[in-house]
Length: 282
Image (cartoon, rainbow, N blue to C red; front, side, top):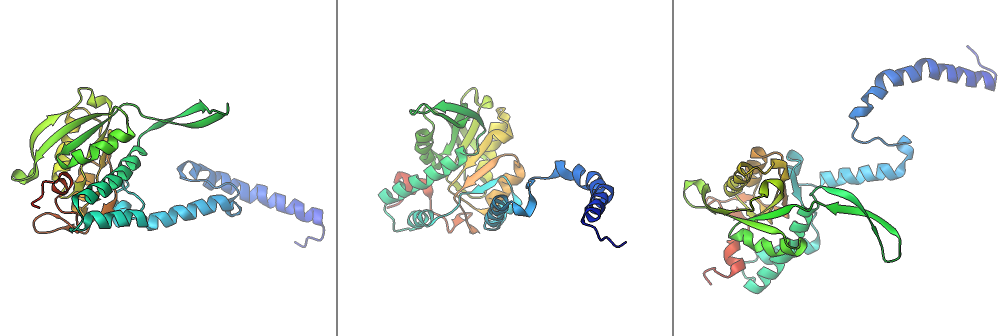
């Protein structure tokens, strides 16, 4: 068919659209819309949305490989400041005063990142200018649980971020019985109704973490309401915790190389509790 007239061409295009394109869209494309994670209005012309997706992909590609396996594992984005603090706390020659100072800074970052994973509701407030600001209101019913004794080093940062927060204690014997012998626990009576932040700066084999989380679940805490906060994590510990409890969240500042023959994290920080509380040999 030879089309010579502009109006005839337009009519032909509309006929083609209504007879082929639109029915095909309705039959094959539209039903799949409900399965889409993201829908970009205007397609490739929406440069803002495309740029956001590109940045998201670049962030995912820059993640540790374990984050690609376990979507419930979160490693805080590193900066030269964070790397510098890690350098200081990992240095065997660092004094106790400096170790505590920089460890506290790293702990605060991990705690604040962990709090960002709590559920929230939208909240509007009136600013001093009389304007309305739409923000968020985080979950109020929280508690911390520190794994004695290294976990106690993280309590001050949690209290600084959450005024008046309740903190429970769990003591697990790390020698003999494969590190799974529960010695002591003291938890809030209403812990089953709270979101729980478990505190332990080193995630090594994962035995103590699994024992502590299992206890919380026996106490009635939903698995999805538990966030495990730690400074450094060995891959072995991450595998054990994430496979045992796929609905909890782990927040850490770095993933280590692994464990040595003595099951100590390498490169690691040494015995964190001894260095932090000043009970090491020196």
